[in-house]
Structure formats: C-alpha cells, structure tokens
Length: 153
Image 1 (tube, one colour):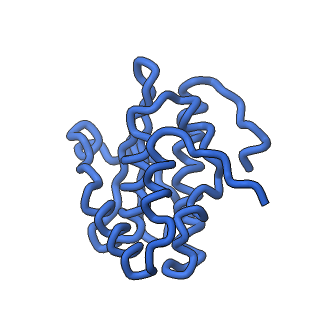
Image 2: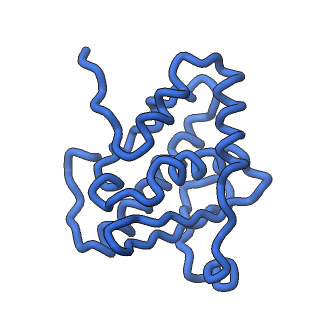
C-alpha cells in the first residue's frame, strides 16, 4: 500500500504529530487543540444567525467561512462542554485558517482517519469532523464559485 499523499496547509504536520501516539496522549493533544480554538469575532458572536449549523454533529456546532484576498478564514462556534468537537475544530483552524482556497478544497473528506483517533473517539464523532470539513469546503466553493471534485468524496 502506498503512503497517503501529504495534506495541504499545516494539516500534514498536525496529523504527523498524532501519528504513533498512545491513545491517552492523542486525547490530550485533541483537548489541547480544543483549548486553542479562538473565540468568535464580535461580528459573528453578535449575529449567530450568520453562522451555518453542522447538523451531523451531536452538539450544536456552527461554522462561518470567509475567503478574502486569496485566503480562507475559519470561524467555529462549539460549546465548551464538547471538547472533542472543539478539538476537531481546533485542528481544522490550526491546519487551514489563512490557507488558499485550493488547499482547503484539496483536503480529502476522510483526512481525520489519519489522526488515528478511531480507537479513542466514536465513529459518530469522526463523522462529525468529516461533516465540519464538508461544510467548510462547500462554503469555500460557494465563495470562489468552484465545483466539487468527485475524487474528494
């Protein structure tokens, strides 16, 4: 089996950091990313209706994506009581915020499998991160008028 292609942006470095860690250390790292998730900018905090809900997530989770000057800006709203979901959002934010739209759109839908969290996190939560990425990519495509690439799915 050939090695997986590198992920765009800083996601490849993040996935590499998770590789070969014991389960408990992976969970600690995921919680670290949850704590790093920046708060919503005031323009979204004051107008939460401008955020899109990710219905596949078990907890209320919202996304706003902006494409400006050739860079994607990601904004996530997840309750503090949902550290796993916040951790996934933190990973996406750390890995993709500020990257060009093409890099964000190049992330495969199943990239989260490379984090190796399948033994530590429920399949439902893993589907949640894929759904979050899907919403981000759809919003980026809408803002850049790009068609989805069939090989990503």
